[in-house]
Image (tube, rainbow, N blue to C red; front, side, top):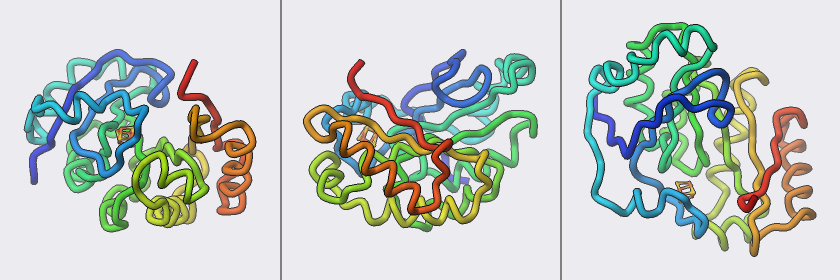
Length: 203
Ligand code: SF4
């Protein structure tokens, strides 16, 4: 199995990354260039650890009891974790089945990167940014057609309790009406309203 390229592991997180107490594994690499990226410096810096699935498991297993008692587990974020989906799929074979595994993603990757983790073992937190192609391109520097195709596939494949889709208000790029429009476009795509979370990048 290829090694993971890991930026950081953050333990004992609550509420932001799924149920219970979670450890966030931030993976290196991202195809997008969001101006508000909080990991931009980390992504640009040369501070990547390369580790096998077994090595990562050993690092995370210290919190096994927390995961069991709170219904938590491991969340892969980034960067864009789907760039390392083969490693994540293999990792899922190693971990105790009680651990929840979650992927926080933009889905802005070729569909071959999504396929290995659509087994139902992983839950997804999708940051779709904006459904309007022009706004998305302005903000990320890339088209959103691939991300939207992947979201459609995810919605058609997984059960409703396996994913949420986040729509941010992005100052300078989207306002309330653009966020509302994205929500409507997501509903048309088949995402239930209860699975859509709106929020602002600025508190
Ligand atoms: S998708 Fe996430 S990690 Fe990638 S540039 Fe945007 S904010 Fe940063």
